[in-house]
Amino acid sequence: MGKRPHHPKRGSLAFMPRVRAPRAIAHVRAWPAEASLRLQGFVGYKAGMTQVFMIDDRKGSLTSGQEICVPATVIETSPLVICSIRLYGSTAHGFNTLTEVWVGDLPKDLSRTINVPKKYDYQKALAEAEALVKEGKVEDVRVVACTQPRLTSMPRKKPDIVEVRVGGTAIVERWNYCKGLLGKQVSAGDTFKDGEYIDALAITKGKGFQGPVKRWGIKILPRKQDDGSRQVGTLGPWKPARIMWTVPGPGQMGYNQRTEFNKRILKLGKEGKEVTPSGGFLRYGPIRSDYVLLAGSVPGPTKRLVHLRQAIRPPSGIPTSPPSITHISTISQQGA
Image (cartoon, rainbow, N blue to C red; front, side):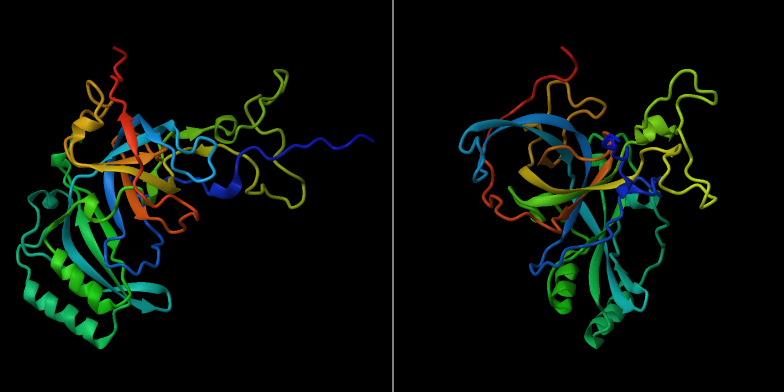
């Protein structure tokens, strides 16, 4: 008998179940243990991609010290407004919200997203939170921030609300740091620095209900197949008498949460003209606010909210200094 042919499975099971995300904003399920006192994440809107010419500073690279062309993603990061401080306590089932302290003067557009209370006792909420911190019941400190889409090219007024963890070791220091940020605006430059490696979390482009050929990449059967050619050849064995979850089948494709690890920040800029192509980005427009230039691609379509998180497992032997950029392409993407 001949050698059995090698036939790897088509489609990765690592992403199962492939279900729709509950909303268009990625949910950060884990945060790195950081000793420095700072916000561990930021959010921005994906504008598009461009080309960056830079000096290769990777040790051991074949092109080390030479000029290389790198594809890069532009994310418009308007300043975030810190709306509240959220304190968490530990339970048998994980973290549980103990209390929240909201700022008295909330942004005007926030009422488009949530029901803003007409009467709120800020001093009372602050005193309750202070008591919980002194009693040692607080296990984690995070802030709730909202975006400002009016400052960007996004065709919307409704802000997005996100939760960001505050790094540090002592709860009291993190609490005092958050009190200083409450009600203020924070930029991406206050959170990250040039050359730093971060993680990008976003919801991918949705493709709706698709068959197994497009969803899993299975082989199209011969044309004389009775039941159809764009389907799986077998649903599995007779026993167990059920269809196993590993069998490729039709269903939802895309609109899943995905995480890209270790994306390098090439530049943190404030002048959008530096990266805006002639005529603006396709289906987005010009960069009007701060921006983050990331090496490589990022999940999601244009205008998708991308959550940038401090790298949870940074690689070793990486360059620590900011990259040396020689040119950023601003060639028109309109085909002119």
